[in-house]
Image 1: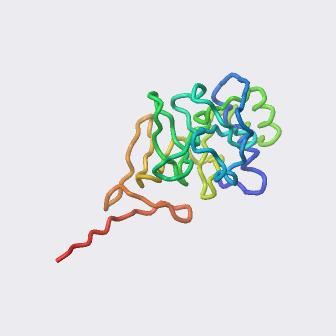
Image 2: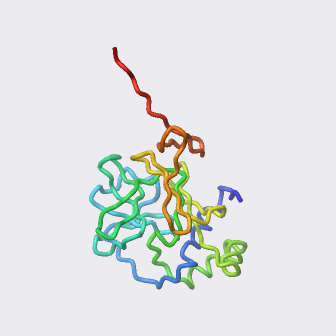
Image 3: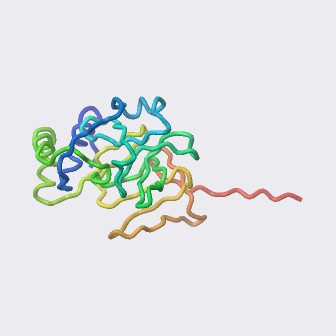
Length: 205
């Protein structure tokens, strides 16, 4: 199901923590929130940001508040910019997620209360509200070409396209599987599609 761009994406994003059962916590940001992705160039390299799904803004977080397994916007020296990465238990990060990556909404360190989400969802997106309540569906988000996370009703498992390696990963029943093609495992993402990337070898005489 493809969503129309004018209003639906931002409004549907507000539902993202519904199936999680997270308790609301207070948010004390050290700096003002930044809009996404327009203000990405103004972000601080030494700061890690959380995506606020209700307002589609980036919230700076101190290291002490980061949660292993969550997806954050952090600076990558390899890419020379901020990228979406998943935090590991040892405090390091994996992946530099590119367009086409899909993540369950609960991975975005949702801190808004469940009751608030339910009210917003029932008002703004009744069809998705019904699906979540009656079917127990888990909201998934997909990273688009403009760097925004949009509701993805077609997916039920995570996927990652790593910008720094060109590798793709998919999750099946909780198991991570590499996506390969006939010429290897590197990919590019163009016009909403994944295409195999081949290594060209030049031989000298």
